[in-house]
Length: 270
Length: 270
Image: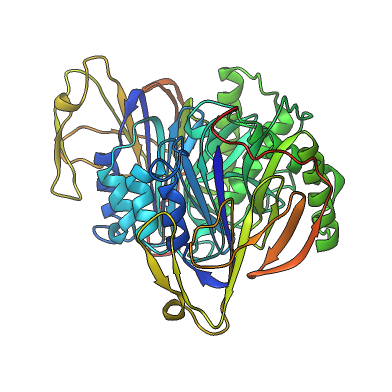
């Protein structure tokens, strides 16, 4: 139905290789052709590209693939619509400002009949995903002060993610540009690349990169995805309820919550 | 210091011609080389591109010029920095969600020592412009309900724009995707193109377009800019304090407020 891609790194790193693999699944090697979007943090700012068409055919996605934009946190999404029309307003990632930072949210899954409480943040489009994002920010703003600690923040994100996961499938990537939070209900995988770097081959395109040529020995770059993007590396597969809180390429906190075991959503049955 | 470009149209229309002229002024025919951004509404969504470099040299701006993205409301900005570093977070237009709509703001000018009251919306970057935008939205949210009439909205925007203009130079473009509000302190011009359409020649590039070939007889397209973009059309020059509220290509309300007469900011003296 959708696929997610996130990156956390300790040095500004481009996502061209991973983005190339992901966007092939938006209409070429996969069915997620109803829109795509990316958000790359650059300092406090965030550079975004969104379209409500297949990423595999997009001239703008082509530029994003071929024009390295270096970042320490990026989130990408390719969409296969279930709830909500195919339109720009329903295209992830969604962005809101909270406490003077841009927060970015991308979701894979579906919550049946999710009805958020009213609050300051409101969805512009008609997806359950954007409603959940607004609900999460409204609750965070009402429950916590901006000076909350990492422990308080992670506790909040884990508790609420587990609660959303009780209502459906909730695979999440969320960031404020400093950290990247990932939560898995059904399907997610990660890889951390560090020295000694080697080559990697995309599953979805004829592309091989030698990370040894692209990096310095201190670089740490983690990639979090719905389905592994490369065919010759070992990916760490999340279990249902597993979450990680990434910063500068490292999973600085991790854990697992009990969530209902559900089949991963596919084109069929949604 | 900066230049603005806005469009309001009654049919989805691309901004390639105007955007081509404007972005030449970002480092080629003009000094506004410290960043550029555009926001094109598409339904309830908004497609944005921002970079903190010269638009005249940008590959991404090149795609925006050559890849027609049709919209009924668009806002563009090229920046020559005065307050705030050259960085992505300081690049206009700024966007926030209010009442389930994306609001987009671009400003030319400077308010000395502007200090907003605290509120829900906060700047991410360090420009006076983004602080003013957040202040305006905070005041709108606290003073009005979402069901406010056009008269109430326009009254609010005009009063507050005139108040900001007491504190400095405040040339503004603001939109929620339905209407486009323009306010002039020092420099602004507009043109409304409608049948019979003719050709137009850019001032800043060797480009001529025959709008008769690009339009239907019922199209109405208005363009609002800091400096006229074409050399062979008659532009309507705003006077200090003049404002217009555009919808579907027409200035559906207009007026003038008393504002202090100031020199238009230039590279010198800022």
